[in-house]
Length: 240
Image 1 (cartoon, rainbow, N blue to C red):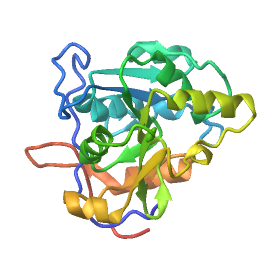
Image 2: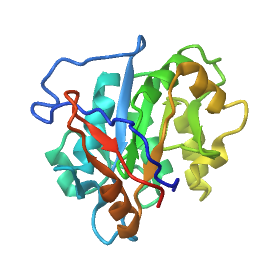
Image 3: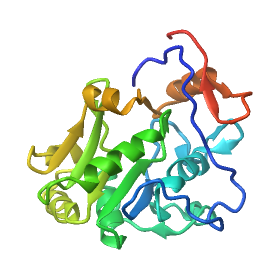
């Protein structure tokens, strides 16, 4: 987990009211579906991470609001019964096999070539990253099955775009007992975005993973409601 730095990056979010009823504000030229992975056991947290409240809304609601402007539709992936309160749910075909199983289920469900995968236990400070991912995916060669950001020298496979045929790779790996997503990122199959790509796009993306109570407490301490007219969440703290 990267250290939280003093910055003024805003995590813009849309109003939670009538989230699925309002017209889709699609900011990319190609059609993309979004899937929120929300089926983890949360064993290190001790409670369901998706239901954790940050600035008055759950992480599930924040994830939905974050990806919605970039997607034709948003669905949740997981087996928890409470997920149906937040939207349409896709069940894992390989229960208990981790995020790769969630990606597999999402791609089998989808009717679009490219699909945004985002894990519920993440905070992303730069939603413009999704725009950049989509732009690169739109012009990717046919053999490219994933567009993945690398942030702080680490790939972020749970904040990435996947092509439907990646489901075949995932199913083969799951059947063989291989559950690590990035093990499937052969150079021919994955386009990895790095610092030079972000610099060219004029963004500085950050992603924070929330796996433990300590990590969640750090996020809560370091993100406060912005008082600006744009709303959102603003980071305003020193290094931990």
